[in-house]
Amino acid sequence: MKRSPLVDIILRPIIITLAAVFFRMSVVNRKNFPKGNLILAGNHISNWDPPFIAAAVPRGVHFMAKASLFKTRLLSWIMLKLGAFPINRRSTVNTDALKKAIELINMGAAVIIFPEGTRSRHGKMLPAKAGVGYIAHATSAPVMPFFLEGMDDPISTLLFKSRFRVTFGQVILPVELEAQYEQGGAKISAEYILDKVKEIRKTRSKGKERNSG
View 1 (cartoon, rainbow, N blue to C red):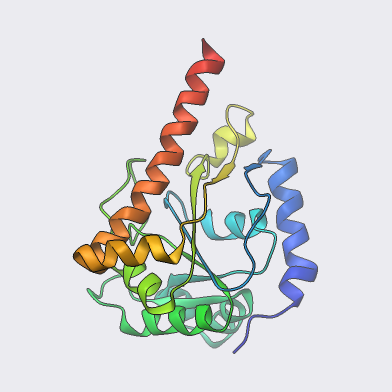
View 2: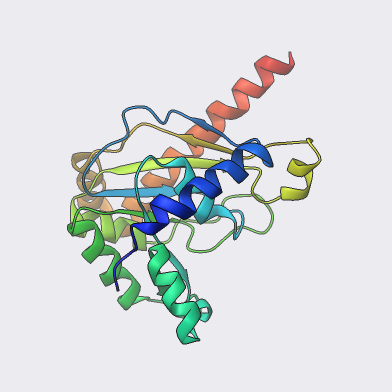
């Protein structure tokens, strides 16, 4: 089942409004967003992440969601219309999810992938899983790294103690990733992608220090 265009017409404006009004979400470096097939890769800190990343991206996106959200026919229909596809987090290798991601990207879609494989419950980034490196190699798609802040603590955001923020980095070109893949396979490519996410975090931290000093 294809992602519904009504998501962009009806639901996306609602999420953007909620993000701006209640969570004061800011988006950094959204200019010159690439067209065509694309992998969006970043840290994963909350179940809130996918819809707010989708709101930050100036185009429709697809994303992986835990398989339990597809158990009933109605919920499965809704998730598919939103552009989600299932991933079994208990499985070591999610072959079906990898194939679906590759299929969508090869069709020209933008797909959100979290290199860590699951959300971090303590805020620190987890080791990279090989999946995103394998998908990047199989599709020869560019990767747009991003770094998320605030989604793990929406209450503080509602109380004006923090805000949601999505910071995009520089696009990682396929030739860069292929060089990493040739050195050590999908795992090395995935680590390279996650390192780019960490660079965004480091830049953000330095910016905070300057503003506070």
